Each structure stands twice: as structure tokens, then as C-alpha cells.
Amino acid sequence: MMFKHDYEKPQVSSNNIEQTGVKSAGTALTATELSDAELIRYARQVLLEGWDIDAQIRLKNSRVVIVGAGGLGCPAAETLARAGVGQIHLIDDDVIEMSNLQRQTLFRPTDIGEFKAKVAAQTLQSINELINVSYEVARVDATNAAQLLNLEAGSQLRTIHGCPNLLLDCTDNFAIRDLLNRLSVRYKLPLLSASAIGMIGQLALFEPSLNTGCYHCVFGDSIQSALSSASQADTESFDERTCANSGVLASTTALMGALQANTALQFLGLQSNPLANKLLLWDGLRMTQRLIGYRKDPSCAVCASY
Ligand SMILES: [Zn+2]
Image (cartoon, rainbow, N blue to C red; front, side):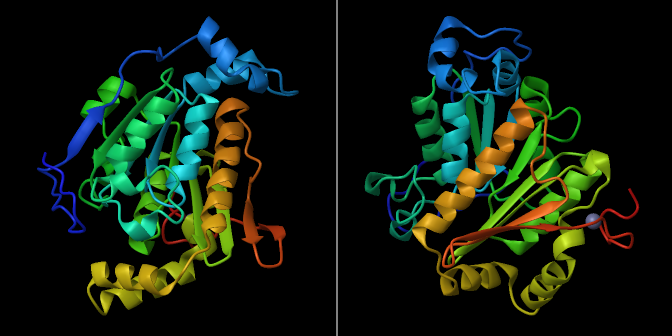
């Protein structure tokens, strides 16, 4: 694939997906120990009270799929890569623009015009050669999502890497958020969803296998309202209008991405959910963080029948 080095977004279709395993060595799928290099690199983590070798090995054996390599995806993915998550797969179809550099921490001015997923994956791999990083340049939609997220039996990625342990929603798109939640529920794939706008952020980790509620249980009305508005016009233009009109402070995405990584590391390494049935709300203006409880909606349009 040729990469354009201007501001025009390359056309990406299902037949034009850029996919690569940036590095294939370094991480066994079912590792039972850490190498000397890993023990040295992750020494400060293994020394942490409550975080032992076994936790680090669980990270090594973990597979995460991150949808969105932007303001949230960059800091979240970087922390997971540095911490030793064994397999990280990025999905994004955008190209890097000048206005992204304010908050999308894996990119430099020389990357403008390149695909975010590709540059982010290469950067992450260069940060930590002991893990496997892969990417796909693709826009997740209802027709390709299950395959892209490696959820359908027989898909190439599933054969190579197995099903993901955790899905990180790092998008800023209502339709994709809704789609990822539906897939999470259907395939019982844990969904770690973060959002950032202005100086506020939200974070939740849904575990469908526990049947304790989903993204739609919490945000159902707002999702339907947003999708309804979008249906009145072209969905693509609605999303662009939303992003263009709603600014975000650089620190908001950095913080929410870090909180997302913090939650992911505990979930993958310690097998615990610090946000079980809780929604985290961050207010950067007032410097407050609140946890609000939620329950499964027995009439939820997405998860009630599961
Ligand atoms: Zn639900």
C-alpha cells in the first residue's frame, strides 16, 4: 500500500486492509516463566507489593485489541506495551493530521499523512521488543467487526493469536461504541470503555460473563439520542462534526488513557476489576474523580436476553 504524505485521507475498504504482525518473536502464547530480559525490564513492577511473577506472566500471555489509535489509544497502548502486555493489536483507519499532535502521544510531525495504526504499532514495538504488536488499517463496522476483533472462529488472527482477553474502546464515535458493546455482550468479551471530551472523562469495564450490565445499560438513552441524530444526516459527517465542535484538553486524553491502562493492567495481571459495576467520572476542571454505581438494566436492548 502506498502512503500519502498529505492531508488527504487514503481510501480504505475491506479489500484494502493493511495488516501486519510487526514482530512475531519474543512472546510464547502460553508462557510459564519470564526470561532474564523480562525480569530486568519489569523489575519495578514485579517488586510491587501485590504484583508478583505470576501477575507479570499473565500480562505476558494477555492479548488486547485496541480500537482507536488516537488521543486515548496512544497513552493507553503505550503504557500496556511498556508494562509487558504480550500481544497488542491496534485497529484504526485514520491518518495522522497536524491537529492530532496536541494529544496523540505516539506521533511526531514527520508522521503526518501516515496511518495512525501503522505508526503507533511501529512505535510501540520499538519501545518494547519483548512483546508482539500488530495492527490493521480498517474502520470497524457491523460487517467486519467480528473478524477484525478476532471473534469469529476460523479468522486468520484467531488462528495465530487466539481470542483477545480484553477489548479497549478508545474511539470517539457513538456508532462504533455501540457496536463494540454489542460484540462484547455477544461474545462475552470484556470491554474497557473510555471517553474524553473537554476536561471530563468517563471509564468503565464491563464483564459480560458476569451478566452485570453493559455499556447500553449505562448510556442507553444517550446512545440512542446520538444515533438518532446521526441518522438524520450522514453518519460520517455527524461524527466529524462532533469531533470538530467539541475540543479536548491534551491532559484529559492523557489521563483517561492512563486510567484505562491502569484498569487493564489490574484486570489482566491480577484478574480483578477495580471498576466492577462502577462508572468512573473524571472532572479535570474541579480535579475530582467520582465512582457511580450502575446495575444491569433488565430491559436493556443489548444484554437483557443474554
Ligand atoms: Zn445492557
